[in-house]
Length: 354
Ligand code: TTP
Ligand code: MG
Image (cartoon, rainbow, N blue to C red; front, side, top):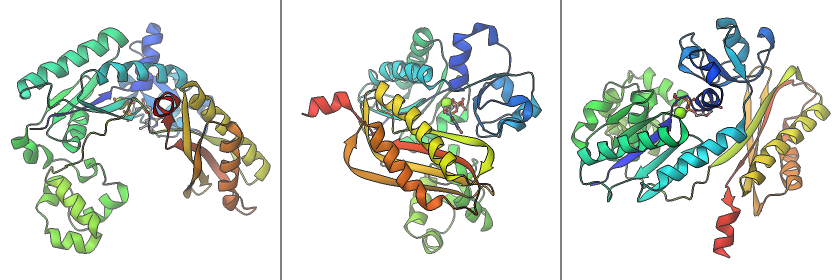
């Protein structure tokens, strides 16, 4: 029997800021772009639960957040601080797992199958992990426990903050059935819309749908989402050494612009920023991706995988500039640009391999 945990930190960036600044406790805290008295153009990275009561959410334009709650504490994103907390948390988590897979800056999968005999044991282990993270890092998390990654991930999101949701194999179908289809890992907004159009709203609706019709409509994807709706997921927790999957930075221009020089300079600065994080965390990367959003919100991403691993700023900047060229057009104004580094390999691990 497999028992998998998914651990996800609660309102992570905002929680770390609250920990560093006890004076913010109880106040709405929003981490993200500068709101500039309601004229700021970036977005909210995250916010604490007090701010969420005002309807503020991750990804929302910062100006809209400011209108909803001008008296909140607004803070810029301090990646260095959050990366440090993340590294410490991953170190704690990894010692409890047979196999450990960091999934993002504030979440990870743990395969604990040989560490626990049953779900009673698993509950005790999850509580122990929560206590230890709280004691060592002063932060809370939510944990989902299930027979596979899919169920564990949905379960950790089920009760937040400071939640612990256990879903045993025999309860999986009943647990998933009432949830909206977009809770499934691979069902994005577009797929959800297509499913809604044929009357599928919940995971239960999807589980009861005719799989051959799904396969016809969505191809191999249809079979995949049908299996997911049954709570079936055979994917293994992929053992990885505390490494994050990607690092990125983006920025929204003060005013939409078609000025190629300004866009390229901004891209260089973003590459510089993300390169700093790469170097500080002792990583090299292989893939560089740029993101461009035009004034009408049409968004493109374009990436390139280099034939070598690099930690050189000049490689990253050169590749980013090359990738963005096709999107620089005098007749199209750009709202946002971004750079992402992925295919990351720790330099420490490289040393081990040599
Ligand atoms: P999440 O785990 O999605 O969000 P959260 O930890 O802030 O809140 P929750 O309690 O619901 O888990 O993301 C982790 C961090 O990633 C988050 O603190 C900030 C960052 N982030 C962004 O920068 N932009 C985004 O759109 C999202 C969703 C997250
Ligand atoms: Mg989180």
